[in-house]
Amino acid sequence: MSDEIRTQRVLLRPVQPSDSGKITEIIHDPRIYRMVARIAPNQTKAQTLAWISTHDAGAARNTDHVRAVEQDGELIGITGAHRQAGKSPFELGYWLAPHAWGKGLMTEAAGALMEWLEHRGEQGFVSGYFADNPASGRVLQKLGFMIAGRGPVFSLGRGETVDHLYMARIARNA
Image (tube, rainbow, N blue to C red):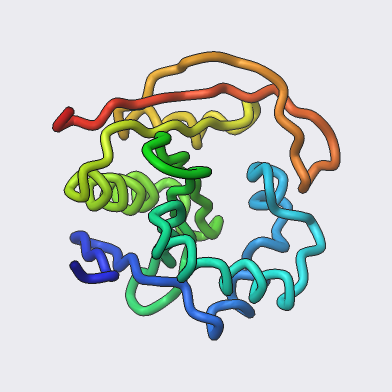
């Protein structure tokens, strides 16, 4: 099975070390790091490279499947699915460069990744969003997620605990 996933408008491909500069540049925007729980506001290129270096092992263990989202040859975001181990549901995560917002690209990209995982036999997914980021919630709703709870989550980018909505989805083929 190919590591690349193509949709009508985007290409999802494995993240490469050569992407580290572009990724680091995009995530330095507070509109990104403030809305993602695990991105520090001052993440360095070296830290981005260290994160990228974990992807192959995670894919081999079937615990991490991270893809760069490209449109017209430009890296515009990241989507990925992570789980601790075994048959736990994958947690879907994503971010998109602000200039690409509002076009349905992340719904398309994250949906394609989930469909790829479903074809591999995965059936459950979890995700969530900070309450002050309703656009992310709309992406998840369009992907068939439903609210499963609410509670505080620490945001590394904000350096504080933030109100968070937890969401879940059972695969369409389950």
